[in-house]
Image 1: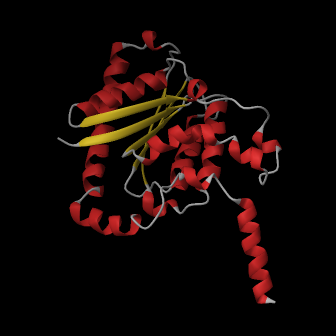
Image 2 (image 1 turned 135 degrees about the vertical axis):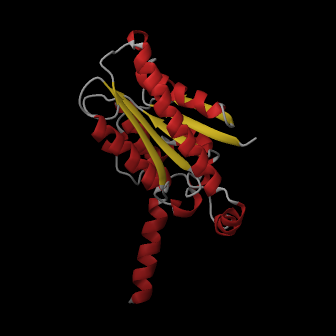
Image 3 (image 1 turned 180 degrees about the vertical axis):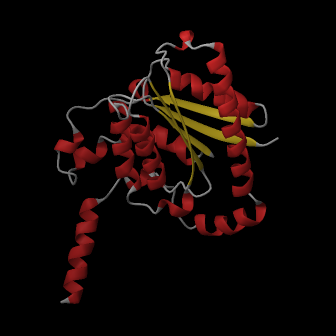
Length: 238
């Protein structure tokens, strides 16, 4: 049976409707394949640091070292076949924790070319809301997955009038189960197509020459090194 590694990043620690929609999807996936699930709840798993990193110059050593605590999350992302970003709508947008995390990953991934290493991965965006903001939230999450190099992305969004999952009616849950079942089948078919033996052989020859997308050894971005390269280039031109 097929075995798929799944990493889920939640934008909140609360037992929300978004969390329960993710669990419905996972249950449907388990009907057809074996899945190894790793879940991260950003408000609990991220280690806070002093000050806002955006307020510091990006070329200072202290700023770069503050990102080390995301390494254990990015290691899981590099080993995953399916990456799920799950976040309820907060004030018509993603949560503050999700925003901070995505900002961190922007600096970790910008140095590397993600288009080859991440093109065999599948992305899924899941979001729920009790009002407006679903489109803007799912668009933000989808854009970040695309920036990482993931081109195969599915989106699931749902407006709930019940804030508490316990109040969701049986009829609504049955509809959600059907919708997540359809998405799980699409994910399975996509996974099989992406891991076709002939296609995978050609991609491995290219990927083997590249570093992981979120390479922890590169310590985000070596701004000073880039400046030296630019100065050296200018000197050679003169």
